Image 1 (cartoon, rainbow, N blue to C red):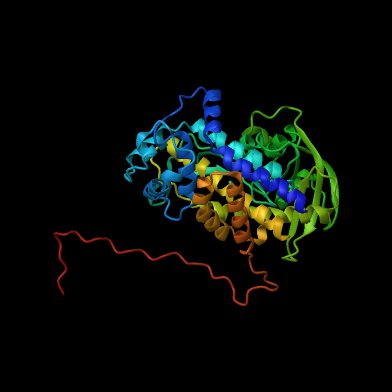
Image 2: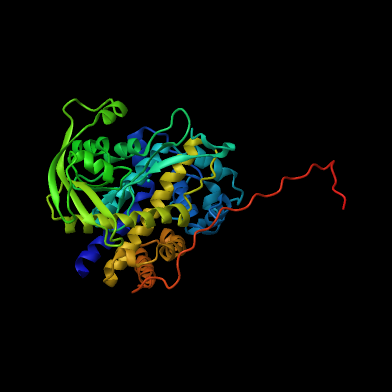
Length: 433
């Protein structure tokens, strides 16, 4: 246990040091044939600041620039070509950083995001992923104000590590569906991954797409779709039946790219919902396992709900304030990088403490990473960097979540819809008592 954790920790330290190092960014620029930006806000500095900005609770440009101005003299990635940085004299105005963010190529953000995921998932051996110009939507009152993006992400149900997501407009003429985005993201999954999906993805087209990538799957099916796959036959709880799932006329009308001979072979499994005795659960899987084992594996899919909550609320990805499409996409990629760094710290802390990663608080781990971020970037030697990482892991290991042995003593309440505010009166019309 100790030796394997030590190896993983060494790899993690190299990832943190190399991913946003000057040499790594220069290598990316040469491979992508991108002109390397010099000056105070080089690509390396911009990547560091964007990750820091996403971890910071305020997430403002000013917070990132203030951080850089205070840490300039100890900044290991500062450009030697900048006289003001050499003299530790940087303006706290946000204009320079704002322009540098806009000029940073999205390909650099994409490569950094992919590199962090590929390196981190290599040290987290247990893998079981799950599948998360933008016009605004509309309702009965008219068009909404805010543009809406649809985003699908694959997560490791054990460690919470997130892959680079796929996204697209949720509304408008170019709108895309969740299944289309999931099929695109499938290509980035590890080869030995098992894809878990709920009823929204439990359709033939997506099952066929997963089969084409030669990956295993566990999909939950609706009762109506289960009957069609079984050909109208019934299935008792705790039983399974081997089937050949073929495309229906509706599947072919909505997915014209399906080949004529398209089919998926697997098992249909029926299980009783452990939480609700009056509900039946139906699954389609290509794994030759007993129903109890399939149910136990699918139960892990719920972990993605808390992962999405962490991405949306704790990392604050539910609302991006950037104005351009390119800047929005770069913000998403850097947010995924920040999220994965926190998840990696949780994994290593839990491993050293003999805990499961999800027994530790993500919010507390994020606060610990943010507090340690300046000390990690200013470390001048490998020994100093190692000591800071060890201190960080000890702090995170103390953020253990409480274990509730029973249900809550009070029921969950549902927030009702708010009342309508009165219309603002015209200044020319006064109401007299």
